[in-house]
Image (tube, rainbow, N blue to C red; front, side, top):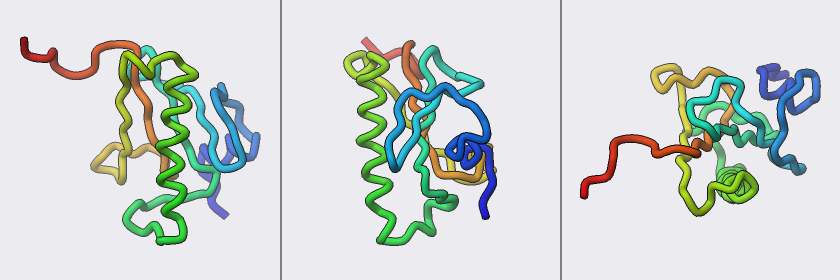
Length: 115
């Protein structure tokens, strides 16, 4: 049985500020935000290594982006823009071994655009 922090949040063993929840996903506020808006889109089915996802699980990846769009709209950043980040493995600084997307917004991210 997988028992990472996201699995515990999904099972309601740990609390989190939930933005959206349905039968397949939970979207929560990041406890260490890197932007004014920083939420995590987490599949309820535990998936760890993206390059080992089977064809049967591809629908989860597609739905994860739909849920990200729903979260952006609910948070009011769908028009100003947002960044989606998926970290995989220790060199990418993945802290929790459970597939998830970061949605960051609420400020200009990255270098200024050239004029």
